[in-house]
Image (cartoon, rainbow, N blue to C red):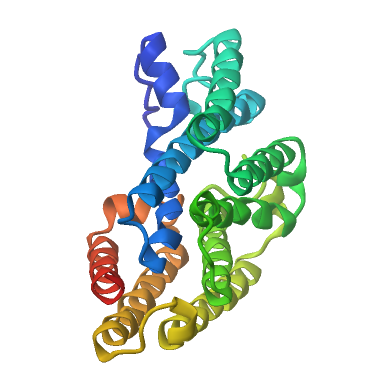
Length: 301
């Protein structure tokens, strides 16, 4: 097999690559709670949500750089990760460390400069602590490591509510929590089938395809059930029980169910290497996401 060489990058491009701007798509979860509550179009909520989004982008990018520094040697053995800027020695250690620290400062300075949301500071702090704990050893503890990664998705979604003091329903939290676990398990399942156990992620030695499949099924079941309960319980949405509002929200269950099935199919086929890849490449999932967003927008607004 012909080995693919790492593309040459200058310092700026290498730094931007290490920040992984494509992963900022995950931070779109910050707008879910305000959107579901029908308050995203309010000027103050929109401003707070945008600030929380930028803060999470900076914090996540700093953590990506920090994690790449710690995993540089292991990444060099990975068929894809070896092309990362730090693993490919295209970004110096000193510049990487200083860049990560600046990004951490920016993350906490953004909300502080606009307003003083203690809830958002707490969410950002928890995300930082959990992510650092993951890098320093939690990533090698089976089950707990998946929970740690899943918590990142949950905290992003909760940050949108914390930034503007928005009420979050119990079913919303259930869907986000198990939806995050669903995506993480799908990623682990794909890694196990593509790369193999223990080659670049030691914790994969503690998982079997059957075990991951059972967790994937469990989390998918809770996601669909929780979303149905949220969509059909008008008191949990905080919206009117009139026909105009409830029908589109209830119909939004359909694209959610089909999206879960397509993601499961992708994970079982070993195609779900990253939670955001399907949104970038799978046209069916993209179409389902658009349909879901439109139905929710009509129902809420």
